[in-house]
Image 1: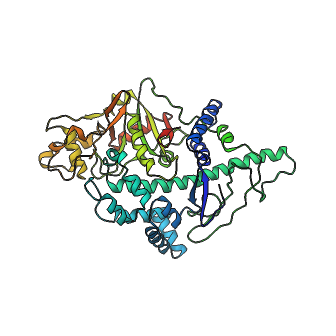
Image 2: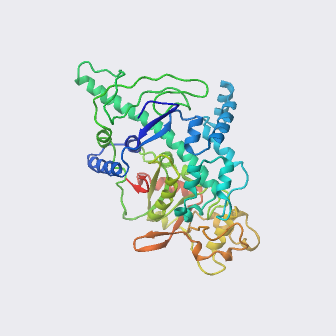
Image 3: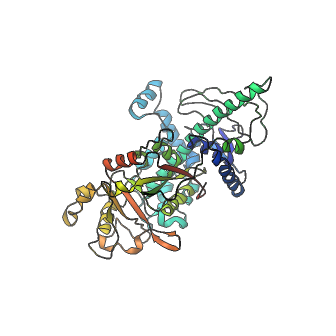
Length: 474
């Protein structure tokens, strides 16, 4: 990590991986050391010590530019953020009502309120993003033709907001991870000081090349990623870098990290389900120390294939499908190691009983419930409110789990077609699985609170989080 210049500093991929992976683990494992070292070496071989420039202060104009806004849009959102807190009373009042003030909230709210969303590829998605103040890097990534099939499974605002929020959360996590890294280093220095006469925590001399420099910070929501702490109201001071003689980033990461990525492909008596999501959400959903799950943070914005206007929890039984979504999502990010595969082992007894999935598969028939469900949901209608020719679908809202294919709008304009009968087999998302280059993608929609809580209870200690770097699990 380099010193801050113009409110930014540079950091290496290895340093990010070292700190972030340790933060996902809860215990050390001697069997994991060799595996992790080889993973880190493989990543470094693919991505040599490239430095990435990150903002030094989390809640700042620089962060808004980093996550994907143009300079002009970032300035406008930053000024809105500052004006909202003209006094400590303003900030405290906001905190009581909405929680910690975050600049990302102002950026996302502006986009949510910006007018019509983008649904189909014949709409000017790039023009809409320009009007919202999205910079060229993020616009290009979202419009990457390689991922058109995945992109058109959701709306434009879905992908833009996900990209902005994930990048912001990754920066916040980076700050927290390096704070943990600092604490780890201090423990190492404390041990070293008991062995080496004259050893001190303080000092201004430079560290050996390649070693991580993380000093303590103060401040609130605006505290910096590594050094200078600040908030909208005050700027804190920080200690200078310490001189150390501890192991390199690779060595001390390997000595402490659990075998992240070492997970069963199968578990007798269980069915594996997967979701590609941000590491920040993974950490919100799973407490590695207690084994407890809270799946609510993993819910997706509407509309979806089986949800018209409410947040819904989706999984897939195909790891390849989850990975396909992760590849596209990570393509939209500046920082590596922002996404992971979230895996649960669900007891078959639960799936044969109260959580038995209700199947909605594609068929050529005009009465196909999958086509009907997708059409009404993509039109932002919920099952329970349907009338007329779809008045037999409200029973779907009462099903704990819906299982069916994933629809993509590559050549279908779901909100413009006159009837579900226009939906074809070609509108199903496909992925390569084994020898099948076009296997139909499958999704589970966990619809009810009862179902979600049953999964949380049954899958305790049966959860694995596998970080992904450039589309490859580590």
